[in-house]
Length: 370
Image (cartoon, rainbow, N blue to C red; front, side, top):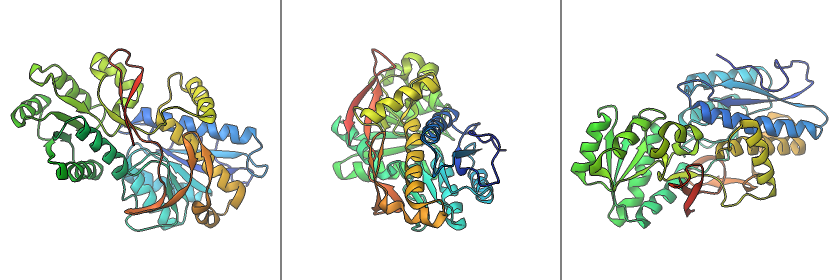
């Protein structure tokens, strides 16, 4: 079930290290590439913290657990990490999984810094134990909806699968588009084949199709079907959840991977810290780092700052969220209370709508900033 500790070998029990739990999807059905990038960022930051002397002379040890996109597995991992004596837990990419981890961390009194999941309702009730770096879904997806409106897309279809995350996204889009005459047609991919989806898009005269589905399937099959249907040559394909961010997308889809706008949480230009970290991450990953890798790095940077200033007691860490002022790779990080979000939230990480350039799929074009 569990991946080994990623730094320093097996978890220590003698108090010789400061242990931080890491939740990452490393096996299917989790998004393995996202997990690999998230972990790479965390590991790089841990190495740098330890090279600088650790926390009060003790090395930081990352105790890694694979969630495999399974909420129950994540909740059990939090329980195990609590027993192992971690001072805090960080990470996770999948929103539904992060929600389960946050609930368990809240119940056990373990500080949890969510790195990448965006679901607004990360917890059912307000909590002092959880903070988040990624922007809330309602913030980022409204930016995406405004991009659609500004580019003339008011009749939008969404290919979707049953999920709290996808349902939330569809609702955000509908609420943003409706006041300006926009419509959102939901097409259930558990009931439709990619070919039947193409027929429905033609019948309903949609001008844009958004992929609110899992990766690689059915997302890849949908893109291929739409791109090779002459009736849909003018249709915009979009992926607000960020599927095209990772190199696997371009490798799998080739020429079909381009011109699919998605949300990316990086500034237009990285500052000195971000540029240095980008170089180190590229070396570690042997490819361009995604925004998820930067989220992993920033998570450890925040926790290291908190541990140095407030100590390693869990309650003190949780109390420290509102006093955090940390320079991250993507800007200055502060946490506050945001309406509709029950956790301490960085408001906001940079939000961009980008796509892969048709002339160079490895290059990203900024289409809108929010």
